[in-house]
Length: 84
Image (cartoon, rainbow, N blue to C red; front, side, top):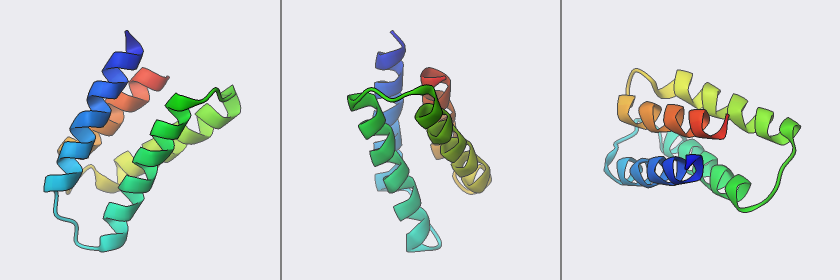
């Protein structure tokens, strides 16, 4: 069940990324890179240490984008909750 929720949130995140405008191209690249990392994490088995590091990067992205991109932030929060 959690996997489906994470996949749904990833789909919404992809949609939001297509529509969002970022002040700096590097900001979009950061979120896209994180998206790829999350997808890679879901496709393989990782230990608690790798998952903890991924959750920390998601949390950092949430803090970075919460004001300018609340929908992206909401998707990232949902993904973190599903992974946690």
